[in-house]
Length: 304
Image 1 (spheres, helix red, strand yellow):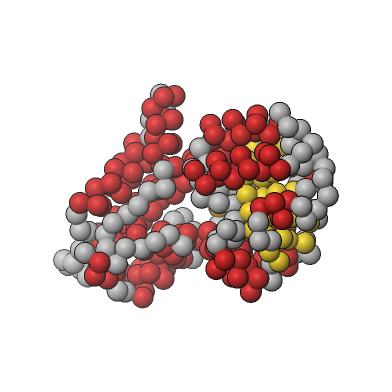
Image 2: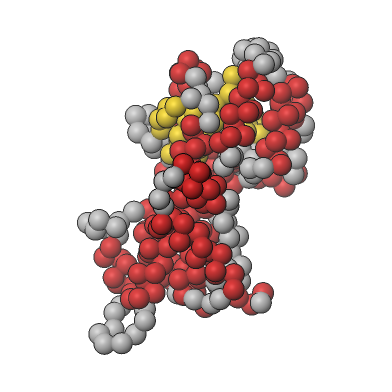
């Protein structure tokens, strides 16, 4: 399959590289010259404009994966593609979009005969090697048409990807996934802060987190990354300022609207907001974890 990839940031390049290794032809576009250069170095051919990208394959068979920041950039990209694509073409929107926007965009494309899938994509900077978790929303027939791509991107053809429902369901599932992530990160950070609090007995925190990585009920990819952060030390150089991408806020808002109690996730969101006004080891750990698994910016303490 010839895949057209819009967005050549770290996630986009990772997706493209993994697909290329699986034997798919990938052509990418990004307005930033440095992003196109990085893609070329990774073995992904590039187009100079979105129009050139769409024109690189025949009408009615174009498969476009959009991997750009949620919000304005996604909205502009979708609008441009709606003008360039036609009946028989299809689009995957793989960013962290608001599920309500995804449902609206599905209708926009459908009016032009273009299929759309919203695909919550998890895996961060490790996904290119280990595979991505894919939560797919949209029509069953279109999911089947894209099956070779999903099988190549997932950790294995049979695991790590699923059709979770109709339009909007993929990004709704990713919103909940990210909200759970907030709670897990907060629990790890608070527990490790208690381990590090001194008193009698003292605990070798690096050794404890290393033990937690294997055989423990709290073992996870996130724990692997966290143990590495603890072992490296140097958290005093990390500013305890923890950003939030917006998915946690949207999840809490949706839970309130639906009458669903989410005290742990809600409190973890509040903790991120509180981190911007105070210093704590937990906040430093949260900031470092986001940087390690997702490539998010880490604010350095010397910038204060």
